[in-house]
Image (cartoon, rainbow, N blue to C red):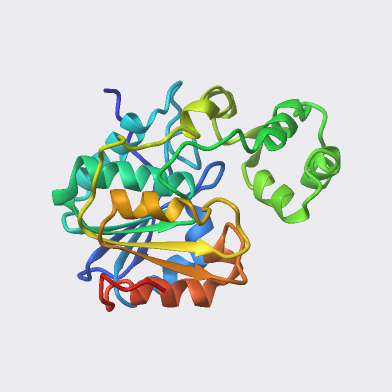
Length: 265
């Protein structure tokens, strides 16, 4: 397996238990800058860029076996054992797969607003907007935003997508591997773990109360695959509680280590 050397951000906390953060689809390690610094109170914190995202290498494929292998390669490269793994959305699905494959490497798991199941197509309009943006014609980020505004009406989502747009010499280009991500959309929305998979370690699912990514009927799936899981709901948050409700999110992460595993919140 062609395992790339992943790019990452290091937030500090040397000597404390290691915590590795994994971003969601079309995101990068920059999504964790605010929360990552705060988490160094109790952890040595690393935030990785998945393949085809951020500053990590580009590859033509990215199934969950490959994504998990990339993360395990990162742990090997940095001699990390007893890792607390925290993943958001796509990163949560990757974290689940890593924990299932190598539970002896993982001290605990925190999954943010994603469920262990297959998802219907999503981000379709985002991908369409990004793929149709005429990169050779745009003159500024403001110009790029105006051109995708009709397809991506939400201002915050437009800003998120355009964090992947970089200027190179006299033109703009996508920093992500947009072709591979577009081609692999169906793979990424599939279930990352086997139907019989179980991770018996300490696990917390942090959910956005205004998000539809984890439905009430998913809770039984969570129980089946993660028998020691707790579920915390941040009622006023959508899909990105680490950004939308940062203080509540941090409190939930810090509680992760201090509560009865049989509890539900």
